[in-house]
Length: 470
View 1 (cartoon, helix red, strand yellow):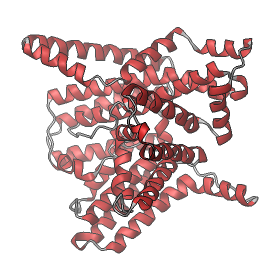
View 2 (cartoon, one colour):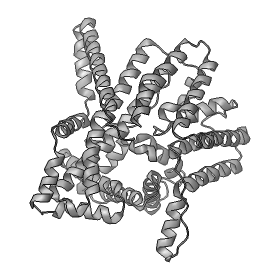
View 3 (cartoon, rainbow, N blue to C red):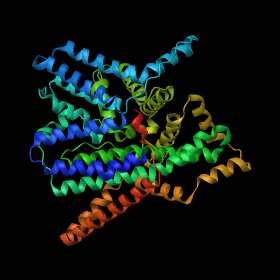
View 4 (cartoon, one colour):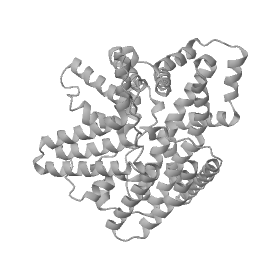
């Protein structure tokens, strides 16, 4: 995986970008991006690239069949087929195992390899068909434009989930300027740095703690592992989103933001407005509102929210830990609505409460079983074994590099937009020369980060993106 990452950064991306730049025809540019996207996906999933193409063909035909008459039958068929494919490849084994456990049966569990990113491109395709039915998007009669939308490699395997209507104009008409390319490249490098330098450092400690088992971990180690994973998943996933947004910008596409400093939230409801925004908005638009939203009374509203949190957890993986994680967040969302004092807490206390809930939730998310999660959470609050072995284990994780990256992670979690904006306004006020110098310094720093990332990757310090398995 390390070698393939270097090939992507040093060969694949530059070659595709140069070809996209020199080709004059937009139609040929789109063809290039389709070919590059299929090659990119086939490199990791040589067989399942056919599944992705089949998904694009299927959804193209369903949308075409609906046409301007918006025939509901084809919408139902599209939903059933898309969810059916997702169920077969992602949830069949989980469903059979659950039946075996509940009914004490011994049905053979099918071993089906999960296609990378199937949850992302399936939801993306579904949003296109549903928007066509709703009249929010015109049906696209050119199949290759639909294929480009579904397969575009920057955000293909880990989001953000993009709606067709948001990039339709850029598929048909787009320009790429030097400034846009430079800004996109810098955003890509920021994301790469988040992943390679911070998330990977957090992963070493998180993996060590969770793999050690609760029996070998005390309160120090448990909190260390929980905090490390909380930082890992944010910088891993937001890093990929930054890379996708940056690469999209290099090719003339503008994807919406997927994260807005979620760890600065002062409530769980605010957290979900800031975390994985494309998924949250997808469930809101295509599940919560169609179920009735908040328009049919308090009880129905509660059931609709419960369904969304359940499905959101299940979307993340075929394991009860993900379902419990989703319902765990749902419970605190309900609690915030029911208990007024939670809504009136001082901001600093609300932030502390939110991060405590988020951190505990990610322990459930990271654990392989509910029992393992409960054991780790128990250690976080009652693991007072201060004997030599568990204390030594905890201290071994606190390497200078880990501590340095942890401090960096905490700093970068804070929303810095206002500070950056003030700095830029100040620079502009003092003249374009200072603004240019600031920009040059930022670009120079980004290339230092790029060089550092390549060195780290060359040394083999790479972990796959967490969301690749979703």
